[in-house]
Length: 325
Image (cartoon, rainbow, N blue to C red; front, top):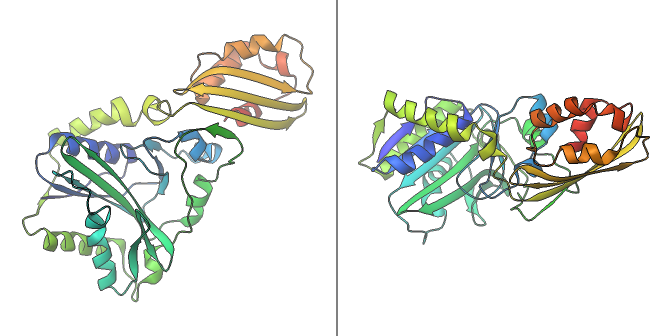
């Protein structure tokens, strides 16, 4: 087994690294990485319905879709991520097999952590780790988070979504009460020391494991995946299942109600209602959005081109962006 610690804190790189290892390495691999603040979305989720879009935009938080299913999670520098990428398709053990090293480290430290439900690790009923899995082509990718010293308030803000705004059939995240591991340690410990314990435990459980450092060729190949997939709107937002959005805002012009139909990230229909006074046929503005990506930059371009205030009166671009996302 190769024991790898990613040199990067950039989420698109680390999610791309998992795919690169899965498709190109013949050895079993254990990977650890830490991401700067970001949101990681499950493979079959509607990205925009899982995140607090305006908060994410304001704080410039990367949003990345991963290969595995499951729910949306928030990462920051206090969150440790672990992945087992193995040459087997044995699912008999569920999630227990590859969460065992983490649980053993915590139990050794006197923390009553356990696997609860199908794929969550908890302490006293509070979740500190969510896990997901992909079994494909004779290999298994199982990865999970470890909230060690994360900023839980930011997590709550990043994933705070109005459930009434979106209608779709995508897999929805189940929000759980969360906690940090450091709150249950008998003695204070730095994340770096915890990482050392986890790596040592994996070495002891897999005696033939050895440390591996990414080569320049590895890094270049992973960066190519970042540039062509994991840092791209098409993958992170455009791969979302079909969804509908309904929203209303109050402006100086009156109430504006927006109803959007979106398929593969592309607006297929826009309807606008309200008690505003329009100087032009509103259908002209609605038709202008057909076939446009449901992306802020693309929407801004249409608004600028269509001189939207001649349709909607005294309303700002920021207000319309709020209504459409």
